[in-house]
Image (cartoon, rainbow, N blue to C red; front, side, top):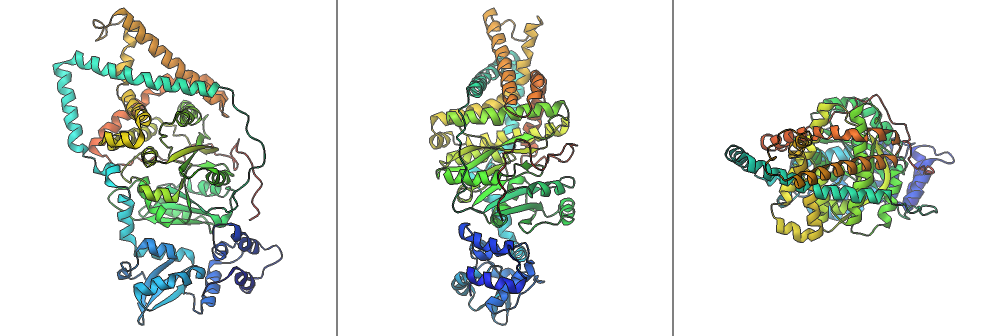
Length: 617
C-alpha cells in the first residue's frame, strides 16, 4: 500500500509530463537527505496540482480520491482515536459508511503503518485519499473541542497565570497603600524612594557590564564554509495574525524570500475564526503550497499564545519558529537556525534572533524605540547570556525544539507577555537559550498612544510572570539556583519597580533646582550628593550604551538622539500604571498592536543580511 521512492519517480510521469530537469524529480531525490518521506516531498511538487497527486496516491491504494469532503466528520469518531494519535498517523476518521469507518489520509506511505491502530480502534476501515489541506480541515473540525481546551490549558496550572487570584489581592494592596499615604505620607515616601534607588543600582551595574562587553575588542569571526546538517529538519513557522488588512500581502512576499527547501518549510498563518478582515486579505492572495491557513476557534480568551498553542498542534516541524505579521526576516535565517540547532547541545532548546526596525527614521519615537532595541538585543541579552542569567525572550524570531515545547506545556495562553514567561519556564526545566546572529526587521510602533498600549501589555505580562513564578519562591530558587534567582529579581522586580516608582526618582530633581522636597529634612548633604552622583552616572551609562549599541548596527546616524532617551522612558511609566490597572480590571486582555502604519517598507533582502547561495530546490 505504501509507495516507494522508486515507484513514485516512475509513476509521476503518468500524472504530468516531466521534462529534463523537472524539479519534481529533484524533490524526490532530495527527500533522502531530508527528514521527510518521498511522498511528503511530492506533496510540494510545483508542477503537479494537489488534486492530481491525491488521484495518483488513491490509484496506488486501489481506491478513488475523495476530493474535498462535503460532510463534516462524525463527532463520535474522535474518542476512539485521540488527536495526537491521529496526527502522528497522518489520518482523520471521517464517516461510518456501509459498516466501515472511512479514514481520510493524504500520504499513502503512512497508511500501511497506521492500519493496525485504525483497525484496533474502529474495526473495518476504508482509506480515502484527500489533499493535505482537506485533511487538516477535517482534523480541525473533528477535534475542535479538544483543541480549544488544549490551547487554553496546555501549560500546567502551577506555571500559568490563569490560576493567579489577583482580583482580591491587588485591591487590598491598593487600600493599604492609600491608607499609609494618608496616615504616614513621609515614611511611605521615604520607603518607596529607597526601593526605587535600590532597584536602580543593580540595573545600572547590569548596563555597565553590557557596555564593557560591547566595547571590548571583538574576536575575529571564524572563517570557512558553513555546512548545513546532513539531514535537514522540517521547520514550522507560526505566524499569528489578527486584523491585518494592511500587512497580509507584504507578509507573504517577505516570507517567500526565505531561502530554505520548500518541502521543509511549513508556514502556518494563524487566524482567529471571527477575523474576517484578515481572512479576506488572505483570500485575495495566492498562497503557495507550503503556506497554509489555520483557523483558531473562539474560546474564553483571545491571545497570541493561545493561537500559538493551537497552531503547534498542526505544525509538521521538529523546529518551531515564531514570526509576527510585520516581520521581514533575513533570507538565510532558516539555514542559520538549522545549522545552529545541529551544532548545539541537546539542552539548548531555544534560539533567539536579533530584532531591528526598518522604519527607524520615521519620527522621534521610532528613533528612540530603535535605540532601545539596539541596547536590548545587541548588548543586554548577550550580557545576560554571558553571566548565566535567565533570558526574557523576544516575541518573534524565536525558534524551539518542538519536543521541548511540548514537554514544558507550550505557551501560557493567559499571559500577555508569553515570551518572557517562556524564557523563564525553559530555564526552570533545565534548558538553555542561545543567541544567533540573524536579523529580522519589523515595523516600529511609533505613535504615542499605541506605543503606550503595547508597552502596558508587556509590563503587565512582566508583572504577571513574576507573580506567577514567585508564588512559590523556594521552588523557583531550587529550580534556578541562587545566581539565576537573583537575576530574576533584578530583571523582573527591578524593572517593575523602576517604572512604577519613576516619578519618585524624578522628584529628586527638585533638590538639584533648590526647590522644596518631601525628604529635604531627612537627607544629609552627603546623601544628596551621593544620590545626584548615582542618577548622573546612571544616565551617562544609559546614553553611552545606546550610542555604542547603535554604532554596531546600520543606525549609527541615530547616535545624536541617544540623550533624548531621558524624555522617552517616562512614557513607560504611564504604560506601567495602565498595566497595573488592567491586572485588576482585565488581567488577560490582549491590547492588540496595529501594524501597517509606516510608509517605509523593507527591501526584499534586508540590508546587512548575509547572503547564501540559493538552494537548488
